[in-house]
Length: 331
Ligand SMILES: CC(C)(COP(=O)(O)OP(=O)(O)OC[C@H]1O[C@@H](n2cnc3c(N)ncnc32)[C@H](O)[C@@H]1OP(=O)(O)O)[C@@H](O)C(=O)NCCC(=O)NCCS
Image (cartoon, rainbow, N blue to C red; front, top):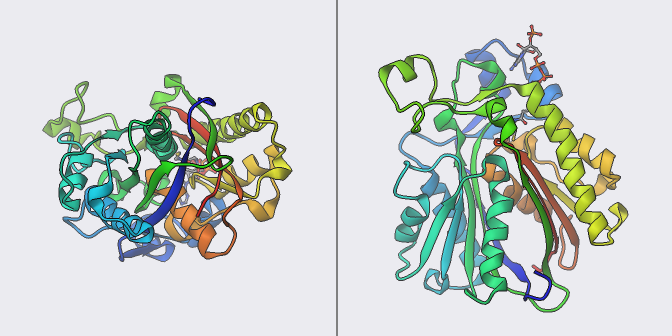
């Protein structure tokens, strides 16, 4: 990879639907309290779509913001990668729907399924096309409508997630800029810790699968928590070590937002400076593929992510999927 040109992010756009579900709203829906949710997860509120709004709609809004920031027409994009675990439907891919809604012709694209690590995986997939010279402008989008796969009577899962999207434009980088390196790992031994059992080829949708609530998120929260704390730190340390980067060199740590305690434990273990750690889970909950671009946006708005900063991204998600990315921020 090092002999190839690097890719860099040249624009960022995000979108969350306007409707907000607060912890107080959940107090009316399930047996929970604002205090429990806040102390266990760090979440205060999350955004959710209205009926009829799908993942591709959020993705298109985020993409339009990124294109506007870059000041280019959608027709300049050569490929689209959509990271999502909640595609509008099994097929066609959400990438096709996004391409059509953006009115771009003659390009290609695909969806990438890696749950909460999907954005970092898609970023890397897109970066490879740029690095090899296959494409000059790639749109990478993380978008999820988690509210479409939640059981709003299960207090252990429904309070955790929200809907949202983020998009970046990837282009060739100059020396010293852009995406430097990544460490990715998958571990299917954790498949049953966080999954949606119904609706696939193993358990096609039937009245029985719906009655058994197999079409919603199932999670062993503690198993996921422990694994996430261990592996997020591990991949970050590996990535920093092999690039000769000290934790104190990182200007901005942008982790997947699943739980504030996972983020803080990872940052402590890796030795990252607390002021570099970006947390916005309080406003959005876990938006799965949307969290990292949404957190990039928060970091920029707060003046904590600036051109030239050395940035570390990290995630653990269902699968398990694990990822970390090191990059030099360029916008
Ligand atoms: C889900 C999570 C917040 C639960 O926190 P926890 O401290 O592990 O809590 P536990 O699951 O041990 O449950 C403790 C108690 O709280 C209860 N509880 C669960 N959800 C609750 C809620 N919303 N309100 C009140 N009580 C709740 C449980 O029923 C349990 O009660 P019990 O002791 O009587 O059985 C936490 O495990 C977590 O964040 N896991 C990782 C999830 C994640 O990141 N998923 C996405 C990965 S990308």
